[in-house]
Amino acid sequence: MADADNRWTRGGWRSPAGIGTIAAVAGVLVAVIALFADRGGDGGSPSATPSTEDTYMFVYGTTMPGHVRHPLIEDFVAESSRASVPGRLYDSGNGYPAAKFSGGPGTIDGYLLRLRPERVAEARRTFTEIEAGLFEPVSVTTSDGVTATAYEWIGPTEGLLRLDGMWRGAEA
Image (cartoon, rainbow, N blue to C red; front, top):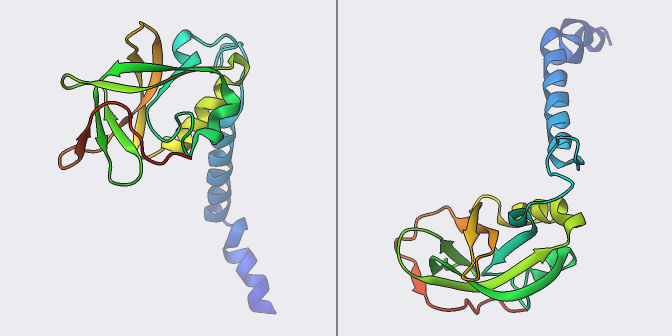
């Protein structure tokens, strides 16, 4: 029993290293909570009135209407319509397409989703969770002149099959 009592006085969570570890974990938790907390129009982000780019998403893959991941985001969508943007579309070989919105001629067909203004922050978090690690948000302009956010493939495209038109895989 003496060894167990000594462990708490010589080290463990009460030691400077233990307290430092607890403080570091608490700091990380506070940062994560702040990242995901909705902050209103008090200077925090996102703003109470989303910009046009925040309100529109251009989707070209599994989150398009009728595809397997659309149910994850459909409650955030007020309206959807067919749209196209400049870029190149590729088959990733993993059941979803990969898009590059710069670097050459081409058109990517997909959908323009108008998000419900009161759900923009939640929608953007959900899109980020879906696309995390493989895609990054970028600004695109549709052929109709609407500025939207789209998720661009961050990996290389060498060796990927180039696609034309609308991606058709993984329909629900």
